[in-house]
Length: 174
Image (cartoon, rainbow, N blue to C red; front, side, top):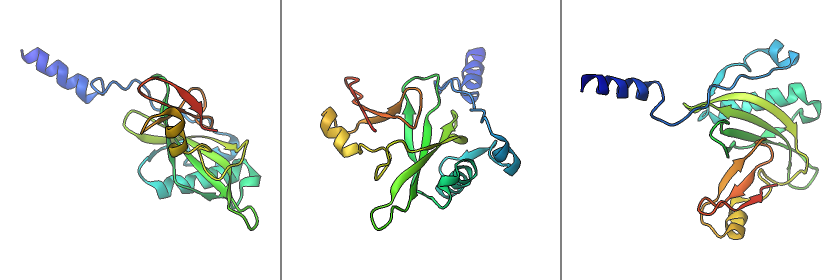
């Protein structure tokens, strides 16, 4: 009995009880980000202000056209497969003249099993929209006939889909 209790305790402490099998993501940094420093560490995924600041720094350093872009709230995008980490995507808004600021870029942070965020990448928005994702949750819920659709990605968190969790049906969120 004692051995069983110790085994269960050790497995639970080391994360085996959570079912999470994703290891901490290792950032692949370019020379500019490596020179600035700080992009290879874990961030508190609940500290929105720090994540937005890091996102802006990464974007301005790697994509000059994003200089001055303002970070919006992070959007959680779940992985569609257990072997890939979930992500936080931070949309970057650039002023679009007199109109509504459009999403000009995106910054991804990948999450480990404990929810720590690791910088991953920056991308220009391929189809600028008013928000990220371009198809909002309400519209996705109506199209998928479900109250709470899941926002997921298969290979790239910048290109998510909405999924009906009860039947697996998906639509593009772009």
